[in-house]
Length: 391
Ligand code: GDD
Ligand code: MN
Image (cartoon, rainbow, N blue to C red; front, side):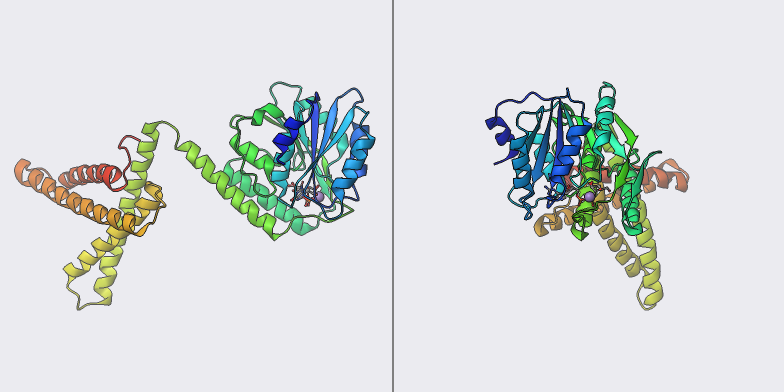
């Protein structure tokens, strides 16, 4: 059963705080974790612990359930969301959030890497209405890591850097698995929940979210084993790529004028690259095959540059990733036709200006290129790639 329906089937719970612990084979620590959480929280706080277990072979879920029934009458309740198979950390967290009732949600690991003693500080920080997410951070002053091998530290630093540079994240520890937030801030977010990095996805998708980092010491687990493996790294790359694309499509939702100019800019950049291709191809053909008539070399150069322009404009300028053969062939034909018409137009404009109005050739050429390329852009936008002109 999915966690939302599971929640709806239960009596409504009134709690201030939901602590989510995703588990996979944490039988050795889960009881001690919950004990430690219980003693760390102020006794008047109504809280629930939600263990999201992916059918751990070591029986974590059963142990948590048993503890839950023993603690039924206390003010901290234990719930277990059981899933049928291992589906990844992010999606486990998401399932926990869907099941949660607390106004505030805390996410933490089940292996004592994250000290439960930090939870009250995180909740405290969230009392400030100007703060939406509190990240327990290893990389702010006062924070640290104990017990990780050099390789793992390096991986973590690298992944952090990728997120900061690639996704424009400013906080110091976006990879943290220990964080708290007001539950309602994610009501409208659609999550991919790939891999390990739930927090990262929140940071990217919640625009204008106000984050506070507080230091803590991460201690490598002493019991059980980490679930981080090559597939987690692969998932991380996939998640970053999707978040990067997400950011770009958000960008394109901005004003039509911005989008129009951005595409025009790309179209002109491609055009300039075409000149280089054209020049390089013509010259090298001429040198490689001295027997080739130079005008034939020039024609091949022009065709090559039109072709590279076509592909670059299709993929980059107009972001059209549909490579259906027939569709692409038609587009290619139209692109070549418009480019040729553009060239003729340019030629006629230059001719008329120089011969008719006695204009300086250099100025006439600039005017010819500008008019022809604007026409080229508009026609290809509208007919080759079937976009509205002003968009
Ligand atoms: N339900 C479920 N399903 N739980 C999972 C899964 C899964 O597929 N994979 C991992 N977990 C649980 C583990 O049982 C543990 O409680 C917690 O998620 C963290 O997993 P670890 O395997 O112990 O991760 P780690 O210690 O190597 O990495 C931690 O530190 C990183 C800091 O760089 C995690 O907190 C990461 O999120 C964090 O980024
Ligand atoms: Mn761990």
